[in-house]
Length: 172
Image (spheres, rainbow, N blue to C red):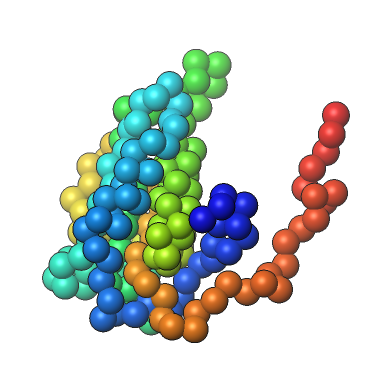
């Protein structure tokens, strides 16, 4: 898909076809795009987890209690290590959240290019994820997304309101 068409058509999917799984080939295409995501000082302080087994899905899905979330056949989690991320010396800023956000953006755009639906979720219970995924104190999750094919008829809302260029850009 042409890039500008892709970013116009990408949307948050909240209706997944639970009976349709994603092929290994498609998952590998999405993961390869993620692998190419930039990170501060090229540290790549991340791991991508794809949860697909019914047992683990049931545990993970407790972190976000929305019915549509429970219909997704896969959940993708991006986690990172604080100690592996780049730190800015002036104020000790840690790039982990930014790095994981870029990674998630690559994943979501690659998934959309393959016809796979996603919905970036930050409103999850981090304690549930920490326990289910056995995260150390050094590991953080900033985003999760369902992965699945949209139910037939789920389409991009072309009337979605976006601010104008004039509202978001300032030329100096």
